[in-house]
Image (cartoon, rainbow, N blue to C red; front, top):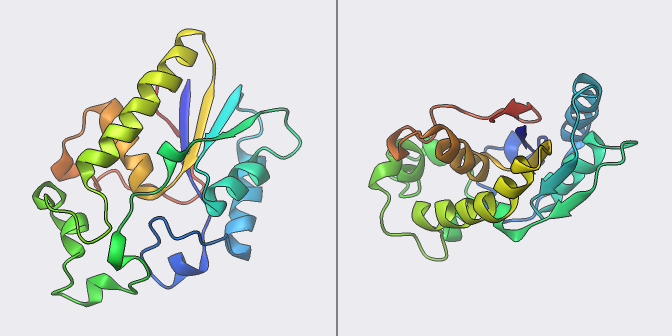
Length: 183
């Protein structure tokens, strides 16, 4: 089985700030969410966990799997999508002319990455490589795999696995600390 989970909440989530690759830790609510998820999902088997190296994902994985003998392996390909110069922008949707909104409102039209940002093509390339090189071989061995990551990064995996087109990228949504079974 392949499972995926988004990290717990951070102060930047609360303020509706774009985090991207900015390494923001969980806040107390986020830690509490991870502890609750640990209890809720305690009976689900995980043989191995892969995590983004960003602290909010790593800490979520550590809290979720506390007391279980499940290895947590960090992989850079699981980092959040980079939003470049727009990381740290607060409430971009409140600014109707904010260029970064195209990523969220019309993802299929986002072709030229902003300064320092990542394209959907690059995001799908790195997560696709991770699935092919790491996940598929483990699934073929019958392993139960957990990926703990981020909103956009996780959605790139969900879209790839479920064959969802880019125009519908955000349609599935992904709640903090909710476990999703993909395969």
